[in-house]
Image (cartoon, rainbow, N blue to C red; front, side, top):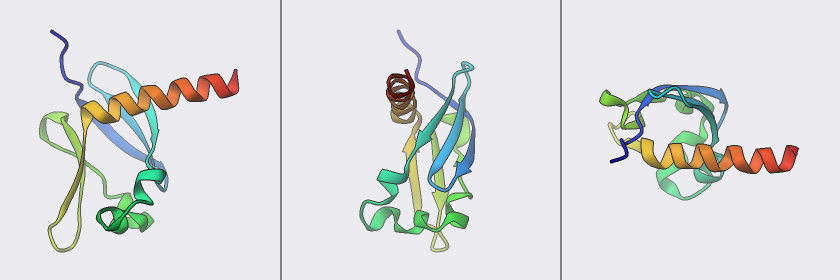
Length: 96
């Protein structure tokens, strides 16, 4: 049985882009800018200071941001890991 990915750390690289380190040692960079451009739910994260406030949830199963009203925006570790790996593959193909 495959273990669910867990995040050890999440650090902003530039606005909309995070470097994620997973507990199994995998490190990836994920570009969330296309996601942030979608809809009202992510509008608060379009401010770079707000984006920098990323937190790793307890046990590393998600990252999250909490706005001034207490609303939590979270993204799960499993989808983030999948997207990190996909974006790395695309980058590898483009760079050659």
